[in-house]
View (cartoon, one colour):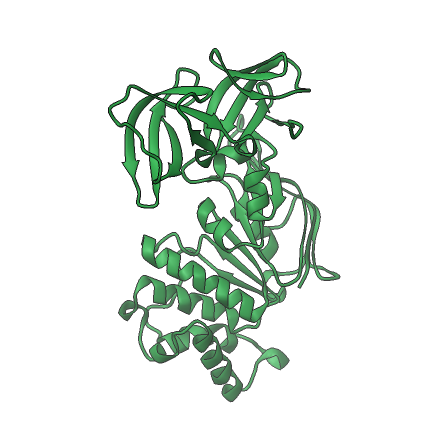
Length: 366
C-alpha cells in the first residue's frame, strides 16, 4: 500500500497564557512506496512519533492530507484505517494467553468484518508461526522473555491483515543482543508479508540496518530522505552528518583560503571553487589514513585495539569535541607512546558545511 503525506502539519496549542504553540510536525511531504520499510529517525522531540500518530489516526493534522493508496484517510477514524500498531511497551493483557492476545483484535470486530471462529484461530496460528512463537500459544506474557513478548505484539498487529504496519520504538525495552535479533526478525517478517511498514526509532544504527529508506527529522522538520547509505555518504547538513554514524563524525573548525581547506595552520585538502570563508569540516572516523608526513597532525591520546580495526583517539585544538576518533586497519602500526599522530584525509569522507546555517558546501571532485 502506497502512503502519501501532503503538507502534513501538526501544531499543539500552548498551555498557559504566555506559552507558545508547539509545531510538532511541519509541512511533511513524502510518498512512501508500496511494500517498503521506512525508518523515521531523529532525536527525542523531533516529531517522529507525532507523525506516526497522525498516520494511524490517533491525532488529527492541523493542516495537510494523508492518502493510503488513492483513499484520502485524513478524517477517517483510527479503527477504520486498516492499520496495525506495535508500541514500545508491548501493551499485552497479562491475564490472557498468547493465543488470546493475538485473537483480541479479531474478536472485537463486528458485523461483516468479523471472521468465523475457525478463521480467527487459523489467522492467529499463521501470525504466530510467522513470528516464530507458535509453540508458545498457551503461555501468558509473564512466562515470556522481552523478545517473545514483542513478537506477540507484532503477531497481534499482523493478524488483522493491516494495510499499513506502524512501529513506535518497538525495540527500546530489549537488551542489546535481543535488539539485534528482533530487528533482523522484523526485517524478515516485513519482506515476507510485503506490508508497507513505518518504523520509528532514535537509534540510527537500528534504522540504517533494516530500512529501505530513512527519513531524518529535527524539530518537526524533515531534514533528508534517502537510502541509508546514500544519506550517510551524502548528508545535506551538519545535523544529518552528526546524527548518523557510529562512532560519530569528527567536526573541526576550519577555514577555506585560496582554494585550500585549513584546519589550524595545516592545509588538509584542495577545495578549488569554494569561496574563502570559515567552515565546519566534518570527517568520518574511517576517513583518516595514517601517514608519517600526513597533512593533519593531532595529539595522540591512546590506541584502542578492536580486532580487525584500531581506534586512534587523539585531540586537536580546532576540534569541536575533546576527542577525535579515527578508525584504521589493524595492519597499521601505531606507536602508542608517541606524542602525536599524522593523517591524510580521504576526500570522499570529509564534508564542508557553512558556518552560518550549517548547510552543505559542495566540493567539486578532483
